Length: 411
Ligand code: GLA
Image 1 (spheres, rainbow, N blue to C red):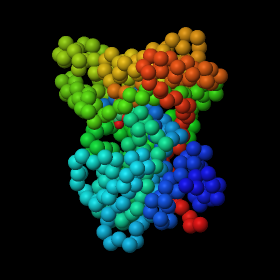
Image 2: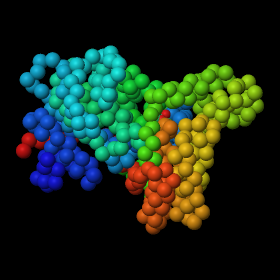
Image 3: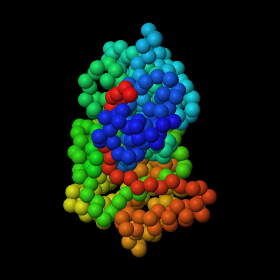
């Protein structure tokens, strides 16, 4: 593999790529040449995302505040001009296996990683597009199952590629909605729109404040001069398709229907408190989380604008407590990590901490004083290993760019 050969880099229009993204791209191109003995034509790169705050609010028409991170999925492809059909031959470096996809608009049950590719292609087929046969490699530096939206990242990378192959001109939000449907119909996860919108539309150095009802995005500058964001992956694999996520969605729908509102976005806390006796206790708690979390997102966005990071940190801790107690999507390991970080807040090293993403495992996001980053990271990792016997993975994250497609020029 020529991953460290600088001569490989000028083949890409890499002006805007970070060092990490370039390395990933160069490695992915090398894997493609190795597996297919062919010249790659396109590479798309789409990031993972971290949600600063606004959890389980997107499918309630609410507000979220995510950002893309500088870890990506790379999809490298070339049209296979020897074929007359629309079969895709795909290789994943993660599973080290090939998959041959006959593209159809209908879902096929029980597939692994290739269902995301198939789902995105199905969206374009349903629009009447004719997709050419391709050879393709998927290569990523995003941890999978860490709650960082590796699936949305793969979907958007594939969507950017197919859009180019079929000369479609869909907007980024339209591509995000197509990918959301792929997740619903091919991966069986009835997700909201947050992940796909964030991965497609993110801008460097900005959080995205998304109104999930109108799907409008405000890009909020992130100016954390003396603070930074530390991601800690608990190592507990989060699994959204296991039914709990869908159950939460159903509980929220039931709460909204019982209270006569279109969605929980429209519910005032006062109304919920006045009418809580009409609902099962667990449904009241689910609704309370959503109502309070929406308020926290708006307060956090205002605090980001005025750089009131202490307030941001308070909202993060409160969000975690609510996800743990009212929404019940945390797990002991995530709770432990947040409590440990709360302990470090007392001596000023940590400003805020919460689980991020769908929950049931995955990661915490921590707002940390920059000059204390190394110390905080070391303490968390050591203490977590002692507590659980598991080596967590921690790395600094900062708002990065959304997905991009690049042409690969011939040597
Ligand atoms: C997952 C889903 C999102 C969102 C989050 C929870 O990441 O894909 O749509 O619902 O969980 O906030």
